[in-house]
Image 1 (cartoon, one colour):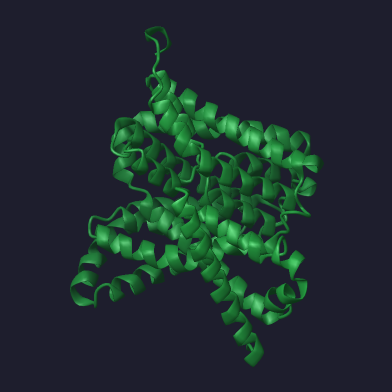
Image 2 (cartoon, helix red, strand yellow):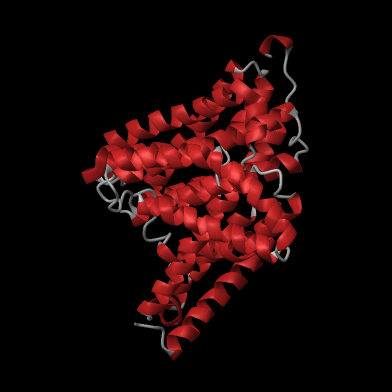
Length: 416
């Protein structure tokens, strides 16, 4: 069995150390500037990667990140685990009772906020595949992916912004959160099906068996699986060391679910996400337990993933102003107007609908994860991926100020 040698082990440890240190430094800078940590972590990766370090100190960059094949394979394993765990805690954030409490209005807002960018994104990508950088050999699937990528909302980021604006527990805030949760669930189901249909996707059991098993897995985990979790968690809390028992058991079922969906031809992240939804919705998973899981993953694995983005792409060489302009323009406008129209259909006033529009336009971790997977599958070019990353950064930075402005907007009676 091939293993890491002495130098490769040292190299791997230096890679992880440098990634975590840089991520912490820049996430703290982002926090001081009242920006999401993900913004700082991505910037840290761009600095550590070929964009800056590789250009300014090429020999040092090569010795640290490019000269050891086995080390890079091991680091990629860490990144894959980080992606799975990120989707796991994203699922934990989905509270089904919040979605049910908002009922049809949340569904209207979520579906319209997805429909407009998916349709517009598909049309643009299908009409101009070579310019935009979608895989022309997988044109329909890749174009659908682009539409889906610009339709995703970053639940964790928008929740933090709403808390900062004291809107989290308001009717508008709950509608945004519920809508974002629906977008997450629908978006990851659709994306998983897209991957199974893609010619560049991994081999599975065939399209129909894969889709059937995916639907079965989703329904079972959110019904019978959730019931089983509700029986196991009290026993775990009572008989196993706390929080160690809960942590190890939670991560074990996360990896089992991820391995199952990977086996049937759906990406592992989907299994992690759905098991996270089932676990997070349990009344026996306390807020303290959720916080421990969040702290463990968000401060160790999340930074490794977001820094790794900057290591994969040269943001200067692969930057295309035209592609970035189209991605940002189409992504911001269609998502905003889709969510805005959904809120108006749901009966909200104009300024509240604007808050919903800006809130659901917030991107962050989820669409970047989706984009990176598509890049690895060869569905999109590096230029298009960079556009998605910049869209995520801009929307995360702008959403808070725009929501605050819309919330305080004074309207005339005729415009309400």
